[in-house]
Image (cartoon, rainbow, N blue to C red; front, top):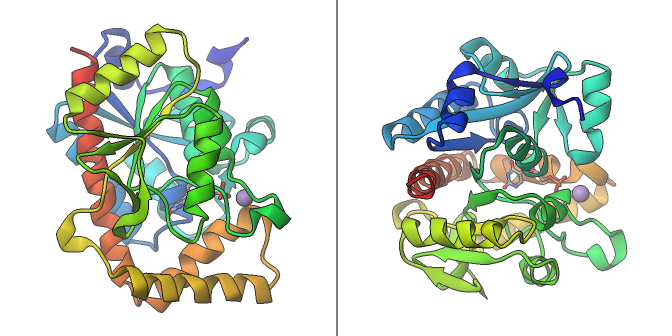
Length: 304
Ligand code: PSU
Ligand code: MN
């Protein structure tokens, strides 16, 4: 391996990792392909501040100039947020982007990969990818799930959007040995909604216990990560049936327009945002802030 050639970690993050102090990784696809400008830029800064306020160091990841970046400058954050030519990089795209020095945003899968290369164990995001509805025909299963099966990072998320088949997503995670832990809830959350109608594997009531479960898993040498499912705060939750209607419409549009492959998730996210006139954006921001806070607390407990 020749990691040093590709990995570019800020001195602050490198020091925190080597001194076993808490660090929380953040993805950049949520910035480049998940939110409009300039709200995404404001979000990128605020989410880092929230992590710092909890006593952890934020590590936003991206692929820039032939490097796997861990920690971005204000200019680099701006580059990820401004509308432009930033690609969406999942695991299969990583080597191409590095070798060709193309700039790309990291998905959950790629952020987990980079975090683990950098020695970071905890990662906060909005929602993970999963098994798409109709995957029986399309085979469209997010690479995020295989990353969770293989890479030792705990991912704090608000579950996943019900544009996915959440039941099949949970089955897939079970098959690959990925625990799904509910943060103070029995219900698997559906991003904008506190419950999907499905259950998590275990309800866990404290960040310290979550950190302990992660430690035990990795001390045993069990490969892979964990889904830490943290429901959206009550006051920002949206109505399940209304969101279901919107999502069904977005899925119909994608089918009509023949959208497929890596374009599917960003297309659906944008369609949902348009149809809800930005109401969903406010919820999206708040649930991600909430995840960052919980992730930072888990990272602090993990380092004790
Ligand atoms: N789901 C969301 N918001 C997002 C994504 C998913 O609610 O921003 C992004 C994440 O980066 C995730 C990726 O890793 O989409 C999954 O894409 P795909 O389904 O193509 O694997
Ligand atoms: Mn896909």
